[in-house]
Length: 364
Image 1: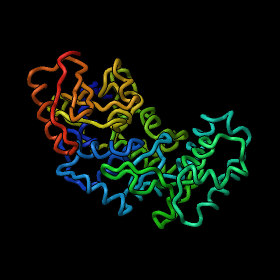
Image 2: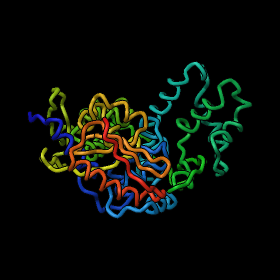
Image 3: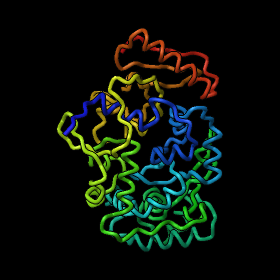
Image 4: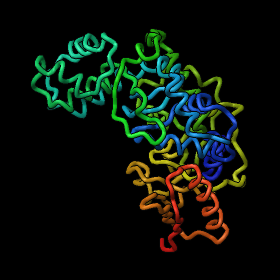
């Protein structure tokens, strides 16, 4: 079985993530291909798309959100994601058990023996009037019936797990600071959520596997689980195996992939890319060593924005007081530093935040 080293996996990831060459696809097409973008920080997906799409402008994502082709909702890993409306409706039922289990596991003592189905029915009844509500407003309508749990805990149970919700614009629009107002997905999209198929081969899981490999492969089963947070995927993997190809990484793990997916030569040049907090290219794996070194793994979960140089996370970046500051994690060559500064100038124009200076730190 062919062994793929870290650099080969790195270039495959960059190609699948549109980070080797910016793509000319539309925003909905890109969001679909990427299987969504993590979006608990509302402005970060704009940076992620700018780094991946040619001629991307913020209004392109704004239009997709207000036009309801893209939606903000809790999905993979119980995290707010931007996904296409079609994927939200197709994938939500498969995520229901995971979403419930994660909230109940996190707040086991606070929720006690609460009947979650009864809470869900009551919450849906409140939301049936079609009026968007904040989490606090929804809890306020129910807290007399369930006075025990803390308001925040009951709200998270309702909004992040029990009732499939869309977070409505202007939340998530460019340069907007709007709070979260929720409406059931089916009401916002005027379409019902797809019921969970009873097929024992897990057809939705198979779709998730193929879509994941198209955007992240080659990857191990553990990477797939880490990305979506779902259990019970072995049936989907088993049913799909004949149509996939297999490799091994340097640790001996089996990696699955789509036969015709791009796997560029390891020496393919990789341009500098400025990535947002919680970017897919890092958080989409259990083993993130293909793009980030072990000493820096904490950056990816702490919400740091990063700079990718020669395909690897090599710096962090921040914007404060009209200054774009870049802090290298390793010494940069003169050519690398020049490329970082050049891409930083493009980023400044995109961010449109009156940034006056770029500072590239010389200390590591």
